[in-house]
Amino acid sequence: MSRFARPRTPSRSTHPAPTGLARTACLLGSGRQLRLVSLRAVGALVPAALLVLAWGGAAPAAAIVPDPPEKACRAFVQEFYDWYAKRSHKGAFGIEEALKERRRVFDAELVRRLREDAAAAAKAPGEIVGLDFDPVLNAQDIAEKYIVGAVRRQGVRFRVDVFGYWNGRKSPRPDVTPEVLRAGSRWVFTNFYYRRDGKQATSNLLQVLQELKRERK
Image (cartoon, rainbow, N blue to C red; front, side):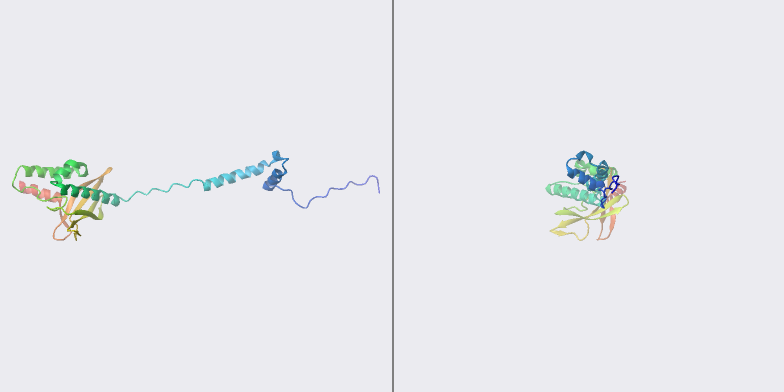
């Protein structure tokens, strides 16, 4: 053998060197080369962590769906009739007292016409020159209670059927059908519709007030 023998070539491993996360794990496991943790591997973890946070974070707030106007309208009318019937059962109470205590729930034109009718009646005591029934209840007597029924939309207004309970039984037909309108942030009564002989509403409060005014001339 020649003394100048060719140096042996180091054998190469058949396994590839670890890269990426595997290399990071190896280096972390060595305990002696913590400072050599691959920045590339750490950089790959950051976007993944952010993605997890984005998907697992707070869920988007559910959209708030406002209640339909029919629901608010029904609640307004029911509350008013509960109050009106309760006050009426306690003693002398009617539309004039309601206008004093809850003026804001009546449309301005309706209030004007009702006060005009009341003033005319006050000038002719003993005579019937004005309303001779309760326009809110469409009766001269008071039922035990009043319950709201169907609510029908008429353009921007709503007509609400109101049933009275007499001797524990619900009226077969609505006693009265008030018409209400949303005025800004509040509801107001604009008219009251009445049935005659079980038919559909054939008259209303504004019409009755107009006829009484014409008869007084």
